[in-house]
Length: 448
Image (cartoon, rainbow, N blue to C red):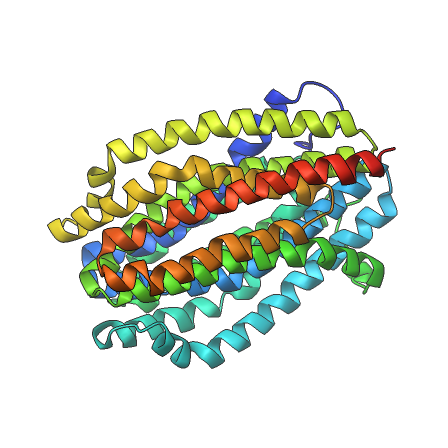
């Protein structure tokens, strides 16, 4: 907790970078859990097992994103109460965040286990990978409580300006995850269930480490068993801000599920290619997302302190730094796309099609970055519903229309991938326009 940052005073550019880079590394390391699964499976089991793991990514993202969004609500209100100097409300919000994570994780496990079979049928998972996909998903779902707990604990640390501690804990558990994957697959002879179990156990380690640090914290974010009570006003505010953010994440995931279903219709080779590329492209996304979350947290604290001018400066600096960082990463990934895919699988078909996905998605990540940044900015002020509605129409709507029209007429992987940059362009134009209207009509009135 000594790594807390003063977001209310001092230079912004360096502090935003110090906040965003560890956060991006945390997201990337989280994804490396799944990348380690895919890499071990692809190298030591086969491409059908690799396709089975990849076929679940969209649905897992749907379940996790809902509560990750709610954790953003926790982040915003704890940051706001911190900016106001309201220690009692900070303490209440921290305990509500932990309760929501644990209860939500249990609910997600039960619901997920119940719908596994019909869901995979709905996704059109081919028969040759169906049993493996079901096995991976069922084992993975057992870890939902600890996965959500880690995300909410990280939100608590972020609200205080500390993104390094979650990264350190995740680094430890990430190393353990690789060891578990190799042990269960090579020593125990397990398949997709082995790597799923390794991911669950490693997530448990990272969440327990953060929990211990929160229990021992000397500040108002300290967790005490006796204080685990329901605070309706805090919970209502957390869901008011966080639920639309979660639904926005779900919209992305729902559209990705539809895209994944279309990918599944192209066969196991394309599924394996897409799975490998996804584990690379998501790292570029986490970089863009980290600046959006930085914008949310910095604005949250300064909004609580009533400093509108500093809030505006946060948006300007976040946009500048995010654009440069995302552009550099995108160029590097596009240049080395085939080599990056080869890390996961050496099959020429997998390499060729995986590179196509990276060209169309990572090559246009700067446009997606605009959506993340302006959505994060509006959430920081406590307005989450509008960006969620824009995403629903611009992302989900455009992709559904594309799949049932353009892709139906030209049934190729490249045609399908074009839907990503196209939907981002439409959504970013609308969202930026909405932001400037919001800035002119809402913020000026609020701070008048």
